[in-house]
Image (cartoon, rainbow, N blue to C red; front, side):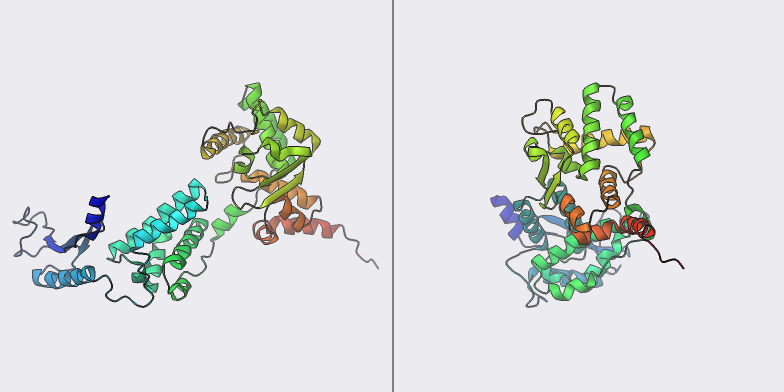
Length: 381
């Protein structure tokens, strides 16, 4: 630990070196001043190595730019405003503290992994610009950084990354109110909207899927558990993670009562007696869980079931790329809407809000409303 602290406090020294061309007679002499090959700067900071083009072939001009870079490193407070937060430290340290805060609030491992990757990319982008502190962040930096996201084809991914970046800016920048407007709303493309459209199974498709189960999984125990999983998700609209970690105690008295893994919101439903009995029958003697053994990692268990579900849907000719277990949730919502349930009732059964339902299931809501309006009596003349 002492060595680490010593490295953090050691003065950074900027050096000039030359990237010789292949035909340069002085190749192999990185500090030769006399040729016209491109000049570069390099230094260490907070235990990391950095390189930056001096954008010149003249050693004299490179010296001036080396001095500018050295001054910025020697006086980290230079050009800082009253908006700086010395308690946060470097941007890298701020990100580390920010993520630890999420871990302390029991965010899931996949969420922490995404935060670590996305914010790490931002830190690398800023470091490449020789900006190492939160107070260095400008509106131009945020705009140019977001322009690099065109490699992320999904607008949903971009939106989630932006949500994480905005949260970091609020955490470590006192002038966040000036910075955040640069991160305006990201519009979804037509392809995004098409991909996000709910895709419920029809009754005929559900029947075909269930009939495929014993063909894909000849083992009777495995087939029974897969069938019960599908029945459960289609009937309750539970997310795959909540289903896999479903506990026997959550099924007491023929009612489903859980708090969602994702939002911690309460889900409360009355179960069909046959489904209730089916779920208890496939526990295989596990004292706590219905589908999970309780010893493997939850993510691993979910991944195995997802793999099996994809194989089943492919054999049944019902697999849609990018849309797997969530189709069961769509099917549950479609059934409830068709049965005349209100959005408030459906939100309570799913552990969601009415606004979320309206956003994600607008097409299904419109379709069912049109069906009901078609049955409304009309005046005749």
